[in-house]
Image (cartoon, rainbow, N blue to C red):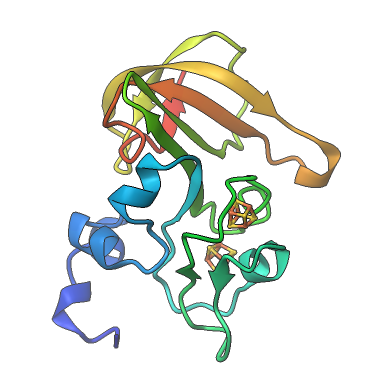
Length: 171
Ligand code: SF4
Ligand code: SF4
C-alpha cells in the first residue's frame, strides 16, 4: 500500500499510534482464533522501513519479510511457538507477546526501556497505545538476560480482553 493511500492518513503517521483499522489490516497481527490458542506474537509494524531482525531471528520461520527488505513483516501464526525471543531485538519496540488462552486473565509481554523497572507482583497502570490508562495490571515477570542487550521484557497479567489493548505501563 502506498503512503499516499488515504487509508494511511489516520493512524500511525498522523496520531503516532496504529488505528484500529491499521491493526486489523496489519499482516503481523494474529487472528482472534490464534490469540485464544496460546501465546503468540503481535507484530505492530506497518512502516515500510529497511529492517528485518525479526525475520532472521525466528528459528520457526514464523515471520516473513523477504525482498525487498522494506516489506512489512507477515506473521505465519501457526508457526509461532510464543517463545518471545523476537521481542527485545526489534529496534522499533513493535513486537508484543499475547496469551489470551485463559478466559479468566490474559498475559501481555513487551520491551520496557525505562527506569525504574517495576517489581514482580507490583500492581501498575496498564496503558494503551496512546498512553492512556485502561486498566490495572500485575507484573508477573521481568526478564533481562544478557542477550536482550539491556532491553528488559515485562510480562503483565491483565483482565480478559486487555491483552490486545495494554502496550506499556505507568508505575
Ligand atoms: S515468539 Fe518465537 S516463534 Fe514466535 S515469532 Fe517470535 S521468535 Fe518466532
Ligand atoms: S524488527 Fe521490528 S521494526 Fe524491524 S521489521 Fe521487524 S517488527 Fe518491524
